[in-house]
Image (cartoon, rainbow, N blue to C red; front, side, top):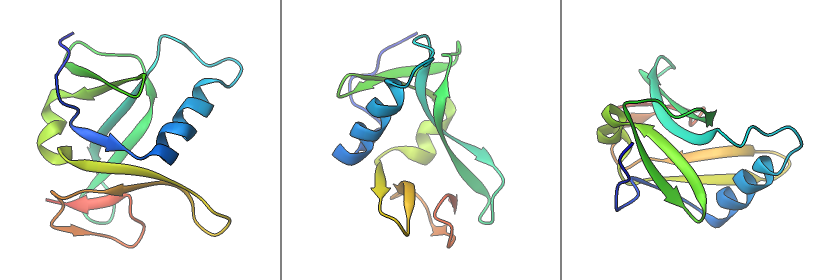
Length: 114
């Protein structure tokens, strides 16, 4: 697996803290990496993927603040420059995505079009 020099996406400090917290949970599989990607579907055409997964052969590997990340090589065109944030408030809790490549997004914030 090749290691790329610049990270295609950014994680805010709150997102980094939340991912590291999740990685400390009992039973976390240390062979898994943080997968950042896209899949078809959602109200605007594509949906973000953010979760822990085992690396695959066609993945690019990169690291953000000690977090090992993987991304399918074909997804970089959709995600390059995106920022992932963690909102820990009572009303809106979860990861949010700010993607400069999205031509439109939907109200849920997890779906976009290019």
